[in-house]
Length: 244
Image (cartoon, rainbow, N blue to C red):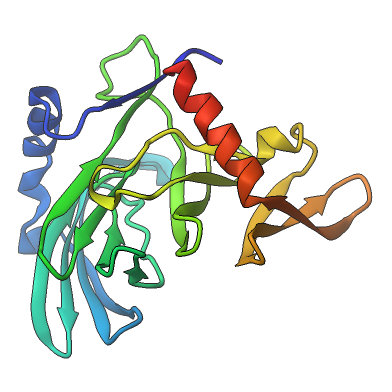
């Protein structure tokens, strides 16, 4: 696989041009659906999805743009509004209670990367990695698709479950000491376990360890594995020092 770039493309001119080219889809004529999902701490997310898909012959279709208008509310009060211009606008489960005393809302503004809103100060941070290098005109290459976030207050580590497109489900772990400028170097449990398991899912943080469940295809069974916080921190530091 090609070299991975951790450069943050959010806010660059190329990224702004890409997003501006998609904004037209936020229009009633492209309305697709609306819905609500509930978070912890009384927060609710309302979303409206817009889709410009052209139907072609023989059942084929071509999607020109997809966008979502998303509103974060707390006890019916509007807290924050943002847009996501991709169909992978996964909804996270919980508000994160950080060791620093603040609460954070994780969210997506794009298919890749992750954003955080400090719901106490309304400061925000967006990170979209440049990803794996490529040879076409796409804004960025492939990177890990994050489905959910699981923070461990004691260790200041965060685990993300998700996948690379067409790859096995994985859990990636990173340092979350500074939520609004976090370390983007994430350690893959799939790599740590030598690509042995077809699917790895987060279970819990407990007793200074990360517990996950793994599907062993050879044995056709689900097993539980764990890694110590100390070992995970060492691997994150090693990856960070390499400067990749």
